[in-house]
Image (cartoon, rainbow, N blue to C red; front, side):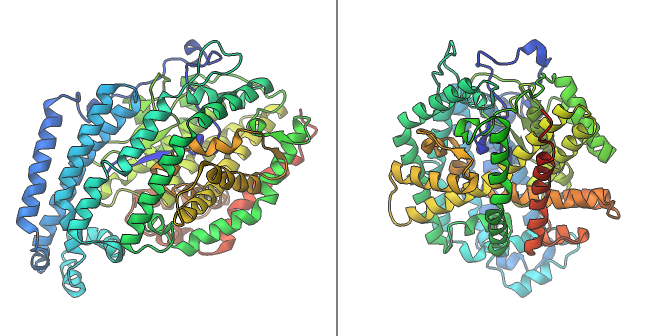
Length: 623
């Protein structure tokens, strides 16, 4: 039941957190004491008796459920009380197994270059896969129960809570295979998709980049961080170093991409999914027409959003066009200061408290109880995420903090996830996980609260312009860039159905999508064509990325209602977060009078970004 929700920063081609192996990295003294998470709330150590016990008892419980109920669930369901026992036992086991998976994943993320941690992660993953294989029958057989029998069983008062879970199970029914085939898919996943995911991760964490002007080779995040350096020559040097290494590894990344796209095509074909993104839509509990409306609205808005903004930014930088390495350059004369960790904490908690003291109190637990890992270390996973772990424990946040204003935004984003995951835990292991489209709501809302607080406290014109421009770029990266990434994925997966793709074909698809989304104000140089290679969501979670745009536009609409003092907004917002995955997005949005099926809903969110660009155009005399 582990859910890792990542910030879109690294996906946008913009390093919001940089690795500490950079020669120009911020000093540790300036940042203050950065927290390192304490995983003892999960397990004391990888070799602890607790880990051994839960693996052993978890396997035994899975076998007991299989021996007791396999082939008998249709009969069991005739008695609501007996069906309740099955569901409760399954939920308890899901929590226990999720705890093991969470611990192994978090331990590995903290240092992916440690062979012992990598081995532990691999071993636990294999054992969990074997255990889950014994449980495959359960959901398959539940979906074979006659509707009338199941409806009667769900009349049991203690089973009412699980009605949404059963409803979601029914949505999976048309795409489920026989138990034997499901077991094969699950077990082969370790040497198929899982192995290629791990190959990608370990390759990325081991890459080093020889950047002109840097005394030592840099890691991926440190090199990406140069793309937002104030010195244009350093931005160019970073971009060229990235391109060189990605080109050197292009055959490997092409193989990984082709293999995983084919793996998905095989799975989709066997299950009966027609469109390349249908399985993601089902997992997100969102209808394809809703996503299509979002994508169509964003595509139509490219000229008034990214095209217009980058033309404006080129003018600020004194250029006719921005080089691709200048896209995330800081503004001229932008006030630069290091935000120490204690100040970042106070900024976010103050912003949260201004909205609701309860939100700040929940977030404060992450600081007080070592639920955050913020320091930069060799081998640590790049980017940032919030791991929900399981309801019986608590979430953990990981980031790579370097003291920039955008790092504060990342902290606010991940803590938004953390607050959401904490509030939803009462739903239990089966209903707490939230579909990705709604899972980004609290994180982006937390960011918006923090940004608005910073903006309100800023009176110096240049600093205000820099903040507004930074937020605009973040929103473009979250909406325009993510929809462009979704478009790239669609083209790749559709083309892969016709045969294996060459590196040149992948590069060409990438460049066509980038040119369309970023517009004529960006000049692409040799090397940018391979920048698709390092984006992790293409590997780990195909078509995940549109959830960021969904969440951002949704939050823009929600925040507008908040500013308008919508009746009972705070209470409704908390109710939405507490619901976890127990409600469809239409049910979640109904109390606010919002409907994601309406194209105007998306246009309203996009108009917020357009309005910020309008404001920036009116500040041309500043700086």
